[in-house]
Image (cartoon, rainbow, N blue to C red; front, side, top):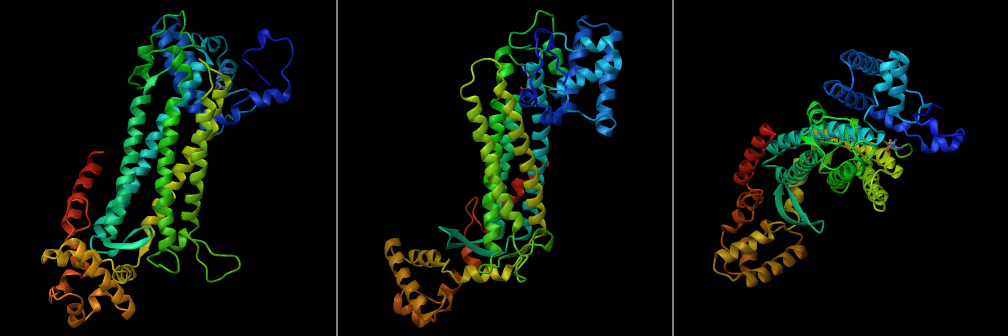
Length: 459
Ligand code: ARG
């Protein structure tokens, strides 16, 4: 057990207390960020003449060596240290001697951990954004491919009006596009550097905080040292945004599960993304979609957990805040895994176009269009609604679709119907007449696809 703060203490820390307190089992995840932050700090100390050029070089080389050796596996992070900060400092001193002891000049682990977590989060936000972008690229490709793949659109999980697969997938495109927007908003708001805030009240050394912020590619230094060491807002914002990503993925998963069911058969999930049953040989289960839906709970849990941890904490740093890490790490890893797997499943999924089109035909999804037909011929909408209601009832009794009725049957219900009713209620017409911006008609879809293509090129 190696601690940085032994001097004031007379008794050895109890082993259980030590383990309870330690964070190295999980904060070793950001050893690279810890070293990156320390290097910036040391460069600044040298610039401010707090360290000599020689000391600076010795420490920088030492830190680079540690980073390299951990990466290649030559140096293992051992849990005899309390946290990753203590580990790096101890190894540095072991390797380069005296200058290593100056690394921590003008710094506290409170601003150090605040910095490390920010650096780590920033890196991860970029990775999540890349995965979201990949999802959008796959969605856009599918949208282009399926502009004429007709399917029923649902409300209340009841067939409502005909749409296309491009239109349906386009809805998810918008969701994940907003998720990317949230990532960049969070990034921009959090991108201020806490380094140099000390334990809570800055330091008496002439630290150049603007310089370290610049070295670490932050927009600038944070402006209140107490807030700097105790701000976890950006993690809460991130967990909230990640929860929203998971909510989107979970809704999408639910649809894939429904579409893949025996009753629907709209899609066939590729063998690589489905699993069998140990007892029922006929089964091919949508496990990946179900797991993504299930893992949503973990991410929501992380958000609730951190909100709860933070709610009663007085200024400034308190040890409770160490609890920000494991859940955030888990949420980030979960979202990254779910995004890549879901995208892979989507890319390889087969859409059964005929089944989808048949389903759209057999659910009276053209009833609104039949009513609109009457309205266009002078029947007030409310009356038209009633007439088509009777028409649908008749169809159900006869076991027919609207477009399957004979002209005399139409006429019997309303003399306003003419031959052109067949054209008016065909699936193609029903979809293609809908060309308001954002609607499923071909023209409207092409317009949106062009906009989204430009967006992906620029972002
Ligand atoms: N492991 C700690 C954390 O994650 C680092 C900061 C420790 N600071 C302290 N005063 N004990 O929050």
